[in-house]
Image (tube, rainbow, N blue to C red; front, side, top):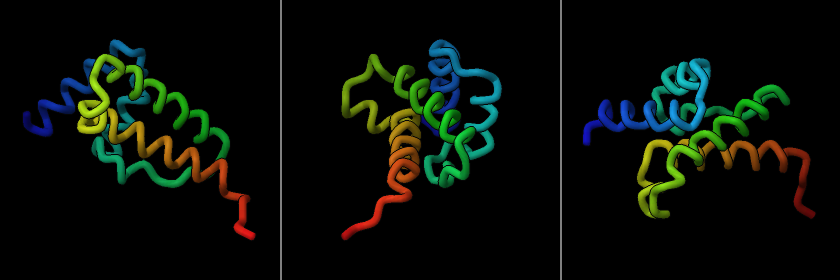
Length: 95
């Protein structure tokens, strides 16, 4: 499956999961690439990332664990989850 085909299928699954036009526009803006999801800057972005992570996970809930990891949605959800973890841990320091 080509990248364009994969993105088209992902858009359809996300639409069924309830993604807004704004969420899909953001995914287009970052090129559907997990590396495009930058660090969180503020609380508003936290909510955006949480919502998008939830939508991405919902769109691949029917897939096996391996298939989720291989999917564009799974990779994006994992990246957003990592960014959210970074945000939560931003004040933590090692002793």
